[in-house]
Length: 321
Image 1 (cartoon, rainbow, N blue to C red):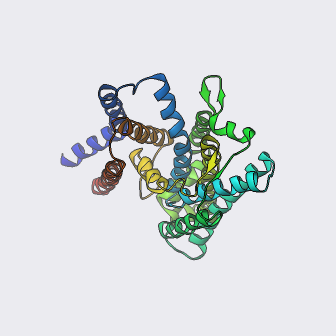
Image 2 (cartoon, one colour):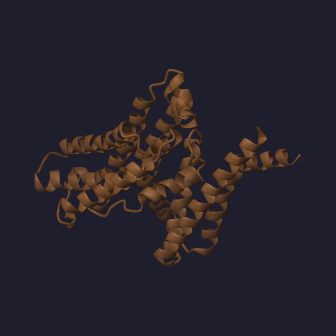
Image 3 (cartoon, helix red, strand yellow):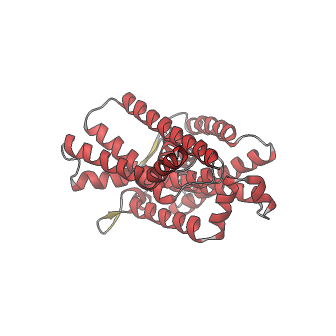
């Protein structure tokens, strides 16, 4: 009887928990924060979460596949600095700079996947090392100075609109649709779930797990490069410290959205809700004048809670077998 009650609670949380959390957070700030529900602020939240959300979707692919990517923030920073250097210092055309930036981001992802596979190192260690290296490289490119004065044709990616919808939000929506289709309607999505659920069983089923591993890390690098384009365009500057909080914020949003830290479980729709929750928290706490250090405390507590619930669900499943 006890096992049945536990299972019911888990199922209830998986179906409604994150949506109730979203509603509670939104209502709290709507009541306590002036102008929180204004049109201008809602658009601002959507613009903020678009860059972050694109990266989280890339990280979600990796985590569902049983991996971890802490290097996305460093990838974003380096790609952003390279974009600025190519366009402002070397005066390359915008299209050429964008293509080179995307290729660079994908190469970072390929490197992460290959190192994890060939050297048989835990992905969290590989990407932690890559994160530290890339953070240093971002500062070395210009000695720690930002690059400003991007071409107008480039700035539109971060500041432009299509009708009343910001271009970054449109790009985020495209990533959501792509992620949902891949993970729910294609064999590739099934293979990624299988890879995260049981790597050896996936191998025995005929899945090329090494190639698939490299593919999901490459997609994460691609997502980071797209976010870098949007961020540089929005701020009209390449900042070496850009994306410094992304590694753990992405993990928090993914786990909060139902992605299992152990892989093989989670949905893109849940990830999107997790991204929106963190976006609302960031925006609402800033409007309330809450100290940024306290914001980090809240995010850390949310990450711990999300991982604890994930571990509890896993333990309950094993007990029910």
